[in-house]
Image 1 (tube, rainbow, N blue to C red):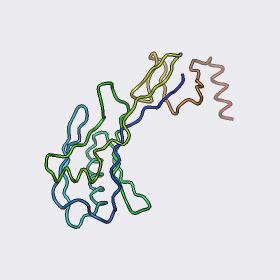
Image 2 (cartoon, one colour):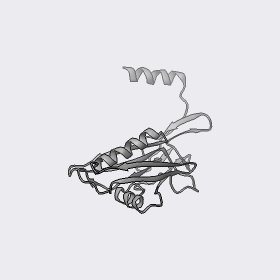
Image 3 (tube, helix red, strand yellow):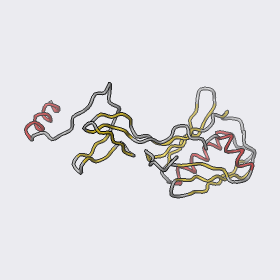
Image 4 (cartoon, rainbow, N blue to C red):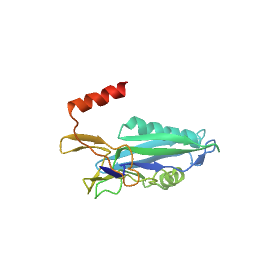
Length: 185
């Protein structure tokens, strides 16, 4: 087994905004979050006493509590700026998919402006499949954990170094016991 690439999740990284400023006009906003099978509508309000950070925190909480297979986190930097990072829990893409999730503002100009300001609709890192050679033949998987011939469940933890490969097979009971005792000692 030689690992060429690990499967990865989709990440949308929003724009970094000054935490204490408010770059979005007060009002009611909504956006659709589409997956390849379902569409979700999110609504949020921005008031006069909000800040960019409090708006990002609201959206983080909305996405986390929706429990739709995404994680959300507000990231801060040393310049008192923050960004909303949204990431899929799922990895990999089928050939007919271009995204795992897509964020689209509703038709109102204010919602479009708010989404442009937040920047969460842009894919910063697309999902990808794992790629590996098994007995010299190229294979891929949506995940980093998969089963081979209903016999071995493998979890890929890293990319192989310099075209090196790992051998996978059965050990005799005596060899397995000796290895476990050696590891214990």
